[in-house]
Length: 147
Image (cartoon, rainbow, N blue to C red; front, side, top):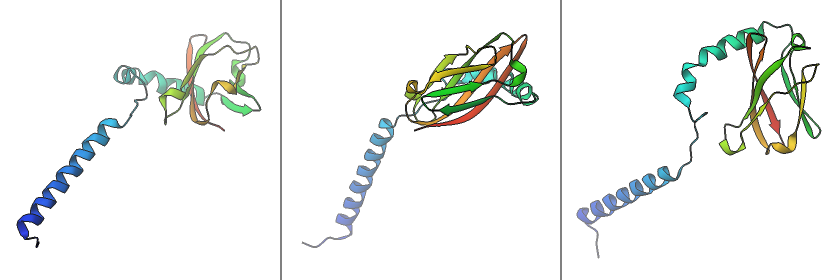
């Protein structure tokens, strides 16, 4: 049996249609996560993040998040020592929303808080610190790798 141009065209069209169907199937099975569920609502409040970042950068020292042994140490800047602090620490994993962890800040008099590293699964996190001292709101981001 010889294949003429009509047979070849039919095979090509069927292969093309099969690839399109495979592409549509794969695209519906892909999981994607937005940064937050309320993305557009949070975008309207982003000026608060910008202002908080400027305030945090104007301090003499920076906030830090360090993994040491079995704990993760959150240290607020020196200027925050002795002040009443409220806020949150959001451990954001861009690769998987199921790994995200949000905790309330409960720092001691020296501006330090320790949490167990067992709360986090291995991965790369962006730690978003948002805290209020007095009437001022501060914001800082730090990268953290958990092995």
